[in-house]
Image (cartoon, rainbow, N blue to C red; front, side, top):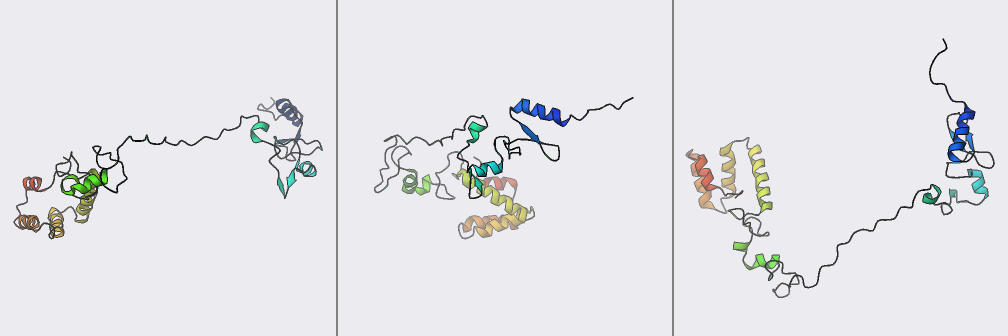
Length: 217
């Protein structure tokens, strides 16, 4: 029995299919694997888009300084594809005039978005003890948290506590002692109470709930 399998197509048949598919003459590469577009002089062109070979293009003046001029061919028109329209970047429309009144503080040109009278900076500067975050003194006081600490400071405190807990080897006494010594200058009375509770081993979970701030609200 003769061997069965896919027979290799003859070069003449491949060339005929190429001409029928593209509509112009082709030439087989020396290796016999590829088929290129054939120039009028009988040589292969650089691509299917270019009708002339490099030598013919140079002779016709389409090359300058060792490079092909691209002004005579447009990629979209030659390839038969629609030209790409550049997208215009979106710009937000300008703010409506007098949408927000100006801050009532003298020599302040900011808009009074907070209650229509003061800007955010002037609102906190008027009464920082009651309006500003007790931790950073920059953001407004949080209404959801009992201690008034803003969300940004709550996240930072949680990260610092997690770091202290890992460094102390998850030892409650070491962590609390470090916090007590750190806050001795700011609040000596609270720090002494914490140290005394640690020394007397009277630091119960109930005491901790009463002593710490309710950061989560």
